[in-house]
Length: 205
Image 1 (cartoon, rainbow, N blue to C red):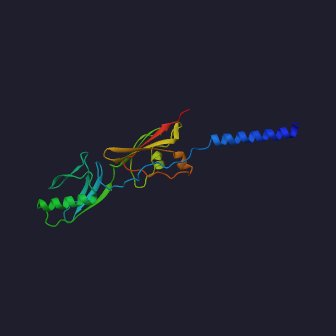
Image 2: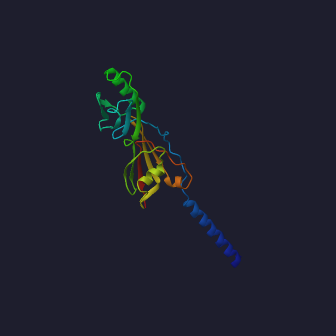
Image 3: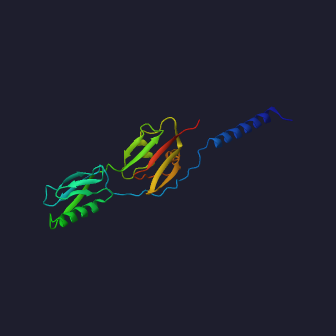
């Protein structure tokens, strides 16, 4: 015989079970670290970068140079120099060698200081407020990259953010990351690499 008291207890038990099931169904998906290689840091120069060359005791050569779209600079008395893809030290050595080989200076003392890095960018597209390309800064992360693009739209799927990373001249790796898991502390933020493309998916209703 089921009494009114026992009926209330059964009702509470069933309600608790239903609530627990609902909580399980709404739980966040497990956080999985993306299978991406660590970012490669490079100081190589590229188009639109600005660097200052100092040639000791030669003020006509000592000035700032902006890398042209074709990756070159026009250096006094030497002419066109291809600098794209070269590290500052390599450009310094190139100028020094050219000055010597062309018998412009016997023992040139050359130094280079990078003033602006404009060639390295990350791209953010999809469901963000301001999609586009943004300057790459040292240590920038996935969350910071999305912030540069104005943050998510109301339609963004924060559990499906894709990172495309070029790892060689003919190979691009793709990984899907949950930014929600990062902001909730369940997953470490992802360091970005120059050239990364981020795409924020739209939520499926």
